[in-house]
Image 1 (tube, rainbow, N blue to C red):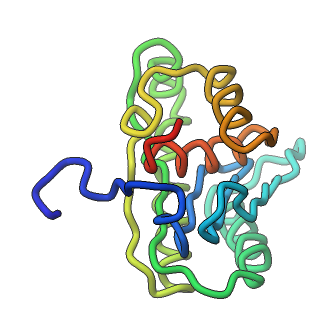
Image 2: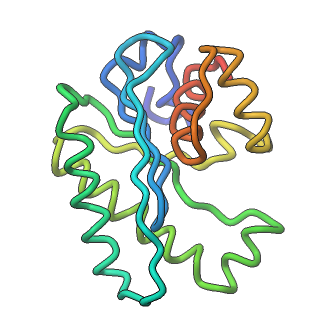
Image 3: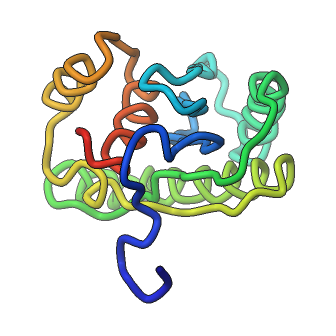
Length: 170
């Protein structure tokens, strides 16, 4: 339904089949591949934080290699849904002034482009406020557990929550 702001939404979790949802970060990336059930195949890519400061390009390259390895087990991806970084008051104000919001935006773009090249699937960027509104991490965790009885780690939780939010069951 082009022209509508929420055209990417689906009517059920089953309609997510073949979708890959990604919560990006420069340090940790959570992802969920949807097979038509309410328990997606998930993963968390954790980048070790070392004391040595590495250039952003080097960190992204290492992240990309880990992401390629993690996603090589997925058969079919027809769309990739990546959380789009956005400015929020409070925490984002601090992130914007420190430069980490810019780094997150760069990471999200890199991840979206890499996964699109790997899968040749359509990439959809979805701002967090469109899939979870103003829900806190604790509320998202509670609702995800209510839907499928599972608990997930930080960014992995957001990747699953994003899918449920898009399906309207969060």
